[in-house]
Length: 163
Image (cartoon, rainbow, N blue to C red; front, side):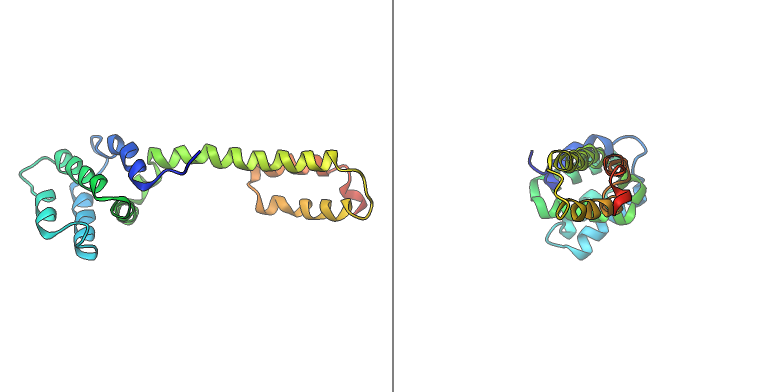
């Protein structure tokens, strides 16, 4: 599975971001100003004025801004996410694209834990090699996610007393 680009994430997050009451007018204005001031190549003064026009509804302006960024390219979408994080951190943490990444991370850790457990189970009990491996794996739950650490500790509890 390939990693999502920022443009892909923006396409996925657009319905969520344009939902009623998600972003306030002030937050949208701050994001537009940041993109215009720090990155004028992303939003020119003319574009910034268009997206900040109070005569147009906030939802329409936001849809236009997100469409403009999607057409502009990957770097522009990435800078939008950076500005969104700065000006609407709680909303940024609730984005659908961020939640889609969490199950993959858990499955990766679970696969790693299962592979290590299988390695320990299938490895011949060589007294010179195995205790060293068990010692390393005994400390790995410190690094690995707490959910996976339970699985690792369950496989190691039998032989840790001899270390």
